[in-house]
Image (tube, rainbow, N blue to C red; front, side, top):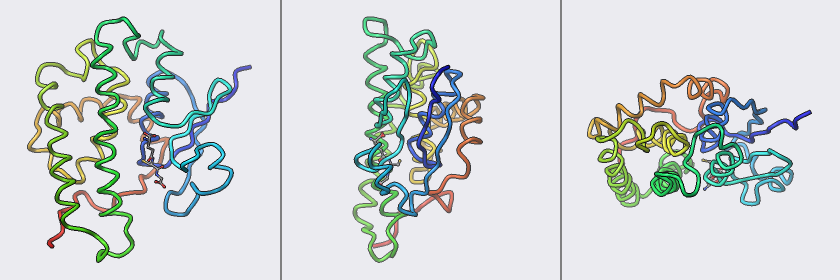
Length: 222
Ligand SMILES: N[C@@H](CCC(=O)N[C@@H](CS)C(=O)NCC(=O)O)C(=O)O
């Protein structure tokens, strides 16, 4: 009998990337949910799986993996028949790796903004200067996506891939800080990937996101 696949997850976090990819591959993980604000991720048991206390963590094939990009690469390399990534030596391998990791360049900007706008307990602790800079950096980092999506429907010319599962979730967070009407192609791409049955299923399985209590966060006056 095959061992169960276990995904350690926080709703609305980077673990969504992995859940969505697993569903795109037709795999059925058990989802173990944590409360990010409640200190769950600092439990010694969880720290034994993820040393920095971060999600996602995936238990699969007798191994424990953390880092969403590494998990994505591992899943695609061990299950090449799913056709969700160009393998070494195949066409578009370089842009695939580039976009897959670029999703974390954007992810870190969002993380900084989440810290400032969502997690700091007292608004007086926020830095309008830092928020303003990070929002600008986020908008700049979306521009290359707008350019590439003018020429193709997905991040790779060959079609939907795991670069999209890494990036797509990131865009859903980014729109809380940058207005997407400036990025019409990116908006169309976002709608296209979110309409996929596996994306919708992951949303349902994950439950309500725990991060945002409003549609858009303005840069505070300062
Ligand atoms: N580069 C890592 C980042 C993981 C990460 O920071 N995850 C966030 C949720 S999106 C987290 O677990 N944060 C908990 C904390 O910072 O305490 C990845 O892509 O997996």
